[in-house]
Amino acid sequence: MVEVGNGFRKHSMALDSTARIQLPIRYYRLAKTALELANISDNDMAHSLCALVVRKNRVLSIGYNSRKTHTIMNNSHMKMLHAECDALLRCGNTEGVEMIVARSKPSGKPGLARPCKICEGILRQFGIRKVFYTVNCETLDDIQLEKMKL
Image (tube, rainbow, N blue to C red):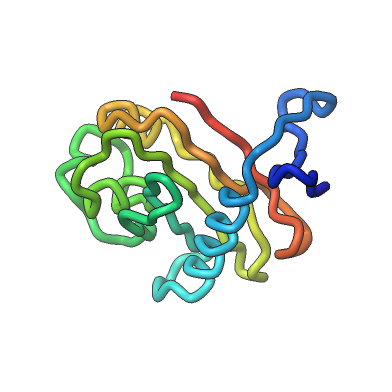
């Protein structure tokens, strides 16, 4: 990952390896925080996920994947509460917010945290328009993010 002098980092999108976009460094800092929180979360799953709902650099809520259930998942195949849904349920006003989702593999390295189709629909219902998620990386220092527009 290359840091540019204007406070942005360059990274490539997975769909087109030649396309370069710039994201503010704050997204990478927040993703690293989410990854650290996922690493220390207390669940018995192989992969831990953490979702942050943020507005203007301020974390409004934090959600984790768990084996709990909730009525928000009644019409889905989901047998557990996904981190994205947990974060939204803990958040009050979702107007103008963004979400950052990080997945921690058992090794502690970042993994692909793209929201599933059901979570995408729920995010749309809550009015979330931008979601940033981690992709597979070899080191914690080189966290890579992809942006999903809903």
